[in-house]
Amino acid sequence: MNTVAVIDYGMGNLHSVAKAVEHVGRELHLDVRVAVTANAETIADADRVIFPGVGAIRDCMAEINRLNVGRMVAEAMKTRPVLAICVGMQALMERSEENGGVDCLGLAPGRVRYFGDELRDERGSRLKVPHMGWNEVRQTREHPLWEGVPDGSRFYFVHSYYVETGSDDLVAGKTTYGKEMVSAFADRNIFATQFHPEKSQTAGLRLLGNFLQWNCAA
Image 1 (tube, rainbow, N blue to C red):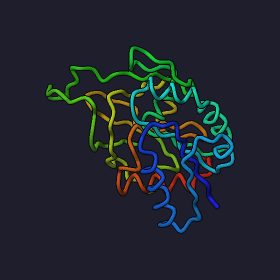
Image 2: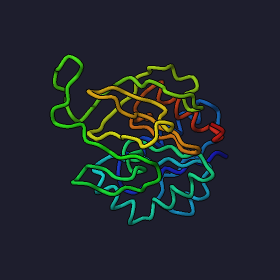
Image 3: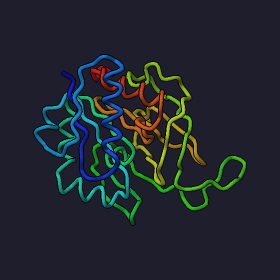
Image 4: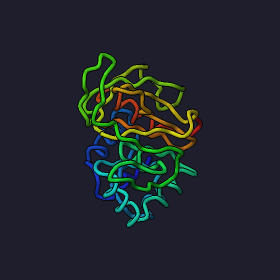
């Protein structure tokens, strides 16, 4: 049995993540059980952990801190594969500019920056914020979760803030939207994406399938 805990702290469409993981498990003929949960024991017992998130970082961090999710994630990162998605990725950083400035978990070096109100592309045309829709991800290093995912694959994004990592060695993927940003990073047992793999069709499902089979030997 391959057990996956999707951490539920009340933010985001967690069941879409769970359904995508269950679908991939069936496609790969894996015996997968997914639990959407905030129970510390269930998360501690899971073989793999997914840390998702959608919404304002202030509200997310309030619930993360209230439920002691940071400790759960930190413990999981020591021994098991962890996948952080969107605001889950941002919450791992040290601090976010959103909501006037919010302290995050500090489990990875870096800060979360606002795209700005005057974001423009290389031709000078104004870009909408939030960054919403499909965009290319350039893989900057090899990783088991990129296995079978062509470099330059398009993934689905929804965000107004982006990660600026404190260590280039952690960057696993970059994307351009007015500026170059980190769209994926990896550090030992954790892989984090600014995009939503559960909404990214073939490439996203392949990444989730790789996560189900990853043994952290990156």
